[in-house]
Image 1 (spheres, one colour):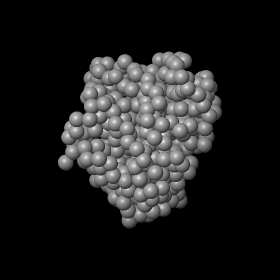
Image 2 (spheres, rainbow, N blue to C red; image 1 turned 90 degrees about the vertical axis):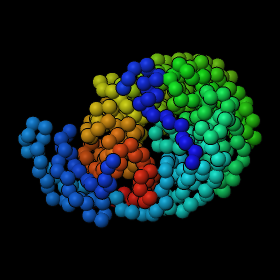
Image 3 (tube, rainbow, N blue to C red; image 1 turned 60 degrees about the vertical axis):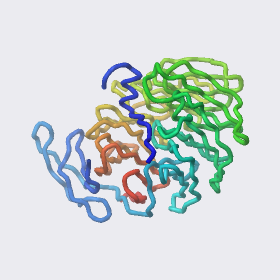
Image 4 (spheres, helix red, strand yellow; image 1 turned 45 degrees about the vertical axis):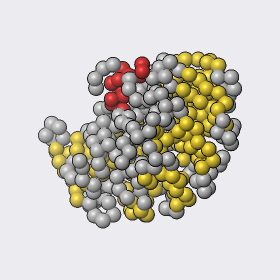
Length: 405
């Protein structure tokens, strides 16, 4: 079996900064602040009994929770896989090590497309996602494994049939084995290639490739650092690295501005006319100009990309806090806490903020108030995504309909 090259978030941060740094599904818990209440047994629907429960906080004082769950996860259809993300209104799965499947929210498979042996599609709801889909095509990065001596690839697939249109291959120099960011605009597919190791060992390339032919149009060669996000709007190209954000003129690849922002491996997120930049200081920039609309110092070690809803923007921290801010003003909405590091970017759907902790808990909060609505233990390090009221994760072969009681 092909061996996937390891891209551990923590090991990458250690290398980049130069400093060191098994669960049972089906258990639902409620917390009161940072304190954990007793565990209730789940019924078949995935929710616990609604009676109040009592336990003690860290100081040994009794605490009481309200109804055990306001959300049910009801099995809807089967067919999950080893990796999952969303794009263009659909789920995308890495169905096998060497294939990618597009699935509608109702569970209907649109297509399954294979890629070459020795490569695996780099799809994820986290900073490692290298998939973009729109009505012109599906563009996905494929990382090279140790079985091949070539570099990473980008595949262009027909959005309806999955038929391969073209493939662009990176050089097999050991420096461009992976793709972590892909976007498309005005007939050009833009992506970044790099490798593992430390930040100063990188020589990342940002390429612009013709969306119809796969021919290279231009490239931007960088001297070091990891590229974790690319956003293109108008004639501006935003390239996010671990410790900086560079703004280019897209038509000429001229560097217009460099900003020192410590984002780590969390990705920038564009929503509407705003670019949200996570970090200890969360920033909202106008698009396409890049002017700062607001910035808020969180006072905490933000550890995720931003989840963006209609009214709020949400991030997670190393110490387990989930922080919510008004998306227009940056004013604080609420903060809540889970047990464990929050590494997975919050996902907002239907007025609910979904969060995964590093230790394996899936939690849901009311987007407006921060009230804890649901918590379930899945598995350490699991990944998930939510689309149109359907939740999928990479641990269970089931898609769940989200029902709010």
